[in-house]
Length: 640
Image (tube, rainbow, N blue to C red; front, side, top):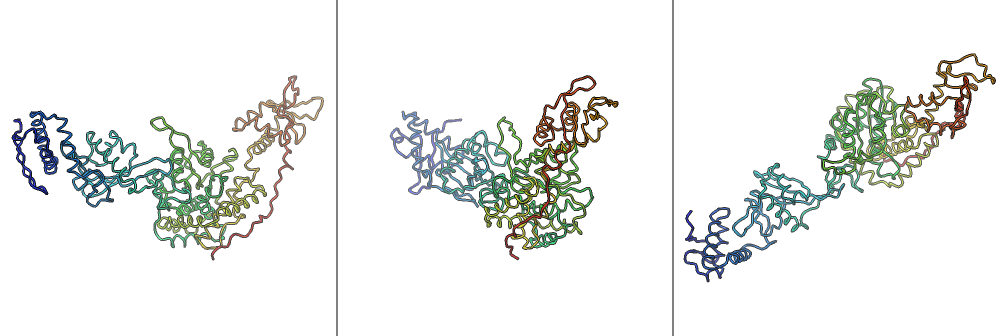
């Protein structure tokens, strides 16, 4: 290519048109603004045209030929650019249909995208409109994000990136997958533009609080508060927390079920458990999550429909939406519970889980309100999964059984359905599937209007009364919260007189004796002794002249209520059923069922052995529980 020696241009300037003949330039000309003003005006006119680069190179070569150093030429050109183009902060974005107008400094932001004048011409940052529109703060972790809007084909889209990604060239290239025109070469320019624009407009850009957890955030309840946005992508199930259909139709159906008919009691308890969930985080710190399970061997008894009614308080109650099946993995349930946070977790069809799966262990863990510790792919600890909500389930099986530990039994309320709950289950199901999600918002507004300390005092009073009648403490707490939650629902949602009473709830709560693991082991051992009575040698003859010698020797029978047990058979029986032998011995000593955990030495068939004195009547008079009428103050005035 022949060197360029003559560029004659005529520009329409505000003062006059500039023409420049490179061949006639002298050393003195490069000491004046003329050649640099010419290049600035050519930059405006030629834009991205490569011819501008040839112009700059031709003038630099001419200056060098005349003895004008290149570094002085470059500095003079940069100073002229600073004069010719607006200074930083004086320009505004002018994108078509832009969501917000920002200060963009020396960047040119219009329908052609984002560019700025460089030393050798116009530098293109992005060939289409793009701008930061908000700063985003994660309410759960405190992490900062940048929300970026860009326009392609006349349509604006938004992307939210961590600031560490938005301001790192090697990471912002990922936006190319989202239809942003960025390359590894232009990424640095885009990062500088976004960083400068975000900083220059820090007072103008809105700060958006976001969360991946529904429920309470202080006195705000997501998704019913506009100040905090929920990131619905954090869990698929949470997208079903929404409103649909007519509130009046849902109310009509729910009110018809809230009468005093015993037939409807399981559905009323399910509704109360659903309303109880947001109270757990507001009424003191001592109330743990609990599980309410509707179980029945009767097919088509209405268990699933009752669960759908309870779920329709918050959102879409269809199976696969808010209702999950027990076939979901434990990990997925923990993730879902973390996202729902203070909204109940609904699980249908417990019988789909095989009996060998220890579902009671999962019930215990999920009622603890925390998930397992996990690491991400970078071997860093992930944020903790936490929640404080009720769990509602239905199925043909119970969540717990008699061999489960006290922790699981105390946290689960088993509601046995003995008859069909609804006369018209299909009508109820169709109504709640078409009309749902309205009651949750109304109920939360009601909680915010209440005196929470007074409510907490009411719960404590009811719980103490239930415990006085022999109800286990955690079960009493859960029963009291069910009663108070249903009173609030009657006050703010249904405007009726059918709130649950303690006598409605009490039959489904476990007594202390029912949850005491060692007491149940004691009863098991008593049954074991009775079943294998032939394996005990009568000790009535003090001289040991027994004529009967069993093949399996378990110990001696002192009398009908007093036995001396050989340690090994007893230990094997307890181990076979998953019971703790040593813990049981200590409990027996404390409750008078054994004289000593070491037992006493005795002789049998010429051998010395250690036998444990065991009294089967030790608890006949201890811990006797007598039912008394529940005395409860009148419920708060309701607006009927």
